[in-house]
Length: 450
Image 1 (tube, helix red, strand yellow):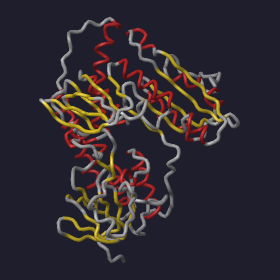
Image 2 (cartoon, rainbow, N blue to C red):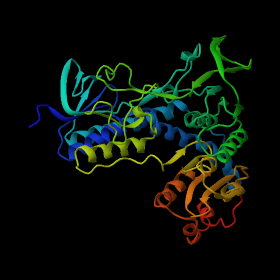
Image 3 (cartoon, rainbow, N blue to C red):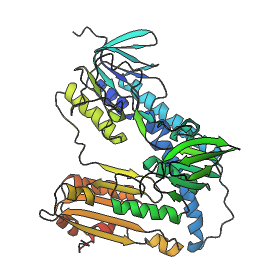
Image 4 (tube, rainbow, N blue to C red):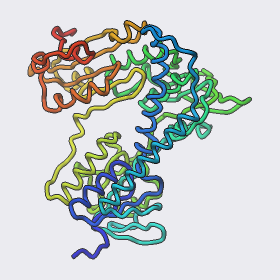
């Protein structure tokens, strides 16, 4: 019989922590979960879900614009951000209630408050010391504030989701998925948007052909891009924000979004005092089993800074439970993961970019399709879709699959099953197309472009 009150104490009730806690309880473990904020974490409360609600709202601007080409006559539309934010808040409250109910029904004890790790087996929360055989750190991440004078004047993604009025001029600093998504959203809401970033094209880490096309599509939508821009300082003057670049460029805006990255939530958690080794970024250093340098303390999700995606955090949490409570050791393979960016147009991918495939020594063939979707032909919209397959020339195995365009996330999610199973180019060739669809282009590519 264990001398501890619990078999598992989880710190952080985001997607990874909630999933792992419920799964452990289902296997008979005595589980407590500690949360200082709302249940649901970044994804549910201030990330994926509310941001996608905003994205759906922004897409109506396209629908209203395209409607005339399809014979519709509409009056001038009027957008009310306060009304949208209220509807978003109501939906997030509903989802949070569902999360709380699922925890309760699973037999997981939810403790509201800020937990601090006091040792290999204990945490202190609300003045009470609790102990468990294992601790799971699932505190996620938060927007980082780089050492730029005045950066505290900028909003982060958290505040953007609570706005009730649309800024006339929005300056977005950064070009990662958060930056390009909010740029597209607020352009759809009617803001004049400038995207300023250090690289030459947005969305670092994605295939270069996709990145170039996203940059072009954003310009087509009227988003001004300041490539090669590095902020030196941000100030407020005369009722506006002024951002000075190290190269002398000066950018003006009514609101500035700091989308310059996120950092793991490990500050003042007591981890270092408990002997847990952290990375220079503050992330918990873990092995493939999500175990930290302390044998009884584990970590999953963004707090480990391995792959910062909600489904990955959930998968890591479930693998941890299988290993520690299920008797079936299992580690998550972070190599082959599908991901999507809900930019406008959206981007999705799985596997290696052309660049990375070559770096790894593969002899490759590249298949591409670049076209205007049927929907855009009738509406008169110039926006194109682009699809790309990176194929190992010797084995014909699909190494990478990339897309930018209408429905890219939905299409790539489906094809990710095939790629994960080890699909080859001849498998795609043998698949009958569903016509007329955009997705059929992935099985109709016959001649390599290079």
